[in-house]
Length: 102
Length: 102
DNA sequence: GCTGTACATGCCTTGACAGGCATATGCTGT
DNA sequence: ACAGCATATGCCTGTCAAGGCATGTACAGC
Image 1 (cartoon, each protein chain N blue to C red):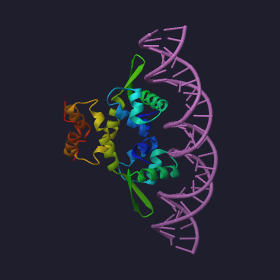
Image 2 (spheres, protein in one colour):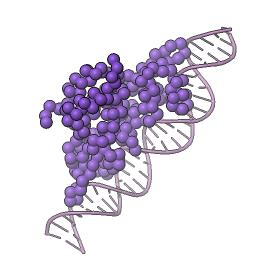
Image 3 (cartoon, rainbow over the protein chains, first blue to last red):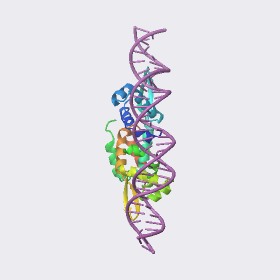
Image 4 (spheres, protein in one colour):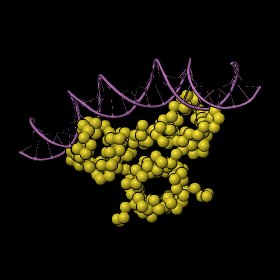
């Protein structure tokens, strides 16, 4: 399943959002209100698409977002960006969108 | 149908790409190899999602990409961008991705 | 070794979408 | 008014994905 297809599912986007910080499956279940099996299935899809990473700690599995495919999405957007911005405008808006820390 | 869902279809992405320059339906048919009805249906979906604009010229309909939803997609990406870039790296890669003309 | 907890997988049903084909609509020139 | 081109729509079918429920697997502590 390719990136766009995977991201088409709203619950998966919600999960991705939660996984900006590393979390065990249970937290995702609580955070989404989905059943545990449903979450596990979404996580499988996300993992197979390279959108998340897993790490086993005891009987828990800790998931976390992976940058790679999203970066590709960002690159896919490139040709279209000029539709709403000229060179310098783009620069500014991206700076605005950046967090201030670190 | 929401933006992500619309973009999940490869042929629709192909069509979007073609419509970076304004074109009549026939050109899209040629450019994709899809049947004319199939193209018309995709264009309908794209239009209803605000991803393209139509303009009637005689018996032709000229389609063209609209920025808005793609811009939202770009904003959706914001929280994830910090995964692969720090402030200045982001600046560079975006400059690289920019076309040189204009 | 057993029980409980955390997660994954299998099976099934339902719903939605993509495309094919036929047909409708709208405009053009004669 | 008519013929023809450009595009849209309707109907039908095959395919596939999402979630529910039941069950499997793995690790932990006693």
